[in-house]
Image 1 (cartoon, rainbow, N blue to C red):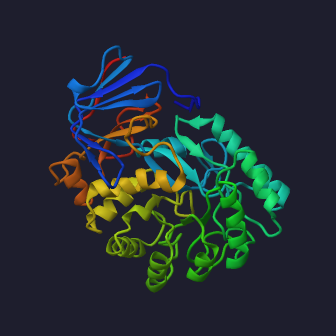
Image 2: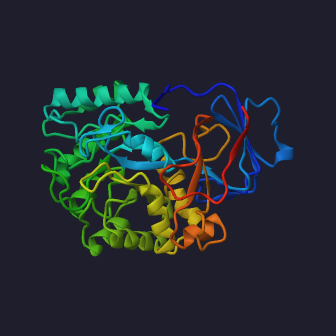
Length: 397
């Protein structure tokens, strides 16, 4: 499927025979339910088969005892236009992410656009255009929250008001443009927050031409909503600085695939010690110089669980409900009224783990058997993950 409309699907969807239902909510990561009912693209009921109204469904999926979870969210991506990345001269990369269980991508700035405008009129025009384009175009059904302007010196409060009124809800990574000091960034973050715009800052060493070192002092003074790739993108800050960011800030701690794994595990341990796992969210920081990683979010879940000794059901929350709350997204939780954006998975064939959770705790990524966005089946068996032991089946449509 090359394209899907932005509107939700009409009709009723029933998913039955769920073996394990992950909620995306750290407070209750596993739900005691085996059936989900969605109507017109939104979850209408979650419970036992005998407790819900499954009659009159347009589509019925037999999960065959597999695991259903909220669709994964990549909190840190760099789209440009359509399903193309000039950074890697690659087409259909977003479709490949869907095959990795990702149903929502959040832009950290359309920074790889050739000739990206850096004047204030141009950067605002690009942000509004990207926001509009991805609101109308969903590659393979994936929701891309785009239009994230990279801050440049000379921007004033009215620029942020204008962006917000036009529908822009994100800032690109602070530090990728000419705004690099804590004081200047803090003023712009405050203006963005005033108008409901979510902000992210680059953390660590430079990643692309024009970026530079952003250390703990700049991050703390800027006070963005999300401490972007706190484990570096790619080069991380010293661990003592990461601890200061964990302890001195209450903002989101974003861990990315294209970062320093040692720093990611250190951040996880520190957040666990502080009983602040709700702050941890996941991204890939791709496309990047290291490529496109369709399985990057699943790999981060497996890393944090298998090496970081985090319960796998909690690790999945980092990629779903935690990100939804920190980014102000509707999707990411299995709750009545939420979008029916779901991924159906099972343990990979021949994994040493006997269940999906055991296999992830051993560091294996699961096999994706189906993805659903707005109550519509978007993919069957993934072409990118290892084959799942069991596959769901559409038994009525």
